[in-house]
Length: 288
Image 1 (cartoon, rainbow, N blue to C red):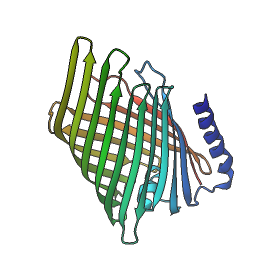
Image 2 (tube, rainbow, N blue to C red):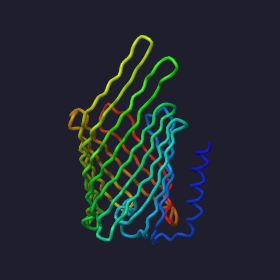
Image 3 (cartoon, one colour):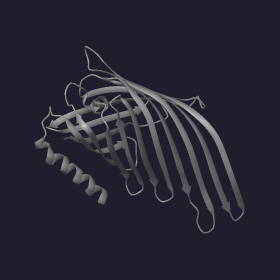
C-alpha cells in the first residue's frame, strides 16, 4: 500500500504543476511514473518511479521528446525505483558531470533485492566525450556483487558472485530531411567473474569456486519518425556462447497531454520463437 501511495503522490504532483509550464519552455526537472507488464505474464506488473534533475535548462524545441535529455549534453543527477509486489525492489541513483570541453564523467549505484534470500549491488564509473552535438564515446567500469542464501537450521545453500565489467561504447543521433533522424548505439563488454557456492546437508557437503570470463556485443538503432514516435531494433551477441544471441524490436510514443505533461507508451518483443509475449509500458511524464 505504501508503494501505491508513493506512486499516486508523484502522479498528483506532476499534474498539479502542469499549469505553470509552457510547452516551449526549457525544463530542468524530468519525472515519470510507469507501469510495466508482459502480455504472457501470470504475475502482476510493476510500477517504476524515476526523477532526473539537469543542472542547466534543457530546450524543449526541435528535437525528439525522448532524446532531449541526451542531446542537451548537460550535467544531471537522477534516481529510480521499481517494485514488484512485495518481493522485488530495485533502487538506482546515477549522475553525469559534463565539462566545458565536452568531456564527461559519470557514476551510478544500483541495489537489487529479491525477498527473502537474494540481493546484489552494482557500482559503476565511467568517462566519455561528446565529439559533436549529438554523438558520444565512453568507457565504463562496473562491479556487481551479491548472491543468494537459503540456509536454515539443518542445511546451508548459498552462492556469491563477484563480477567486473569493462565496456567501450558509442552513441550517435543522425538527422534526416524527411523524418526526424536515427539514434545508433553500440557497445562491447568484457567481464571477469568468480562464483563461490556452498551446499551442506546432513549427508552431503560441497564447496566450489568457479572463475571465468565472457564478452558481449550489443547494437541498437531507433528511427524517430516524428518527435513523438520511434521504432527500433536491438541485437546482442555472446562471443562465448554463439547460441545466445537475441534480436528485439520495439516502439515508443510520447503523447503531450497538456503543458509539461505527457503520456508515454512503449512495446518490445523478442524475435526468438522460444520467448512468448510482448513487454509493454504505460507512463505519465512531467517536465518543468
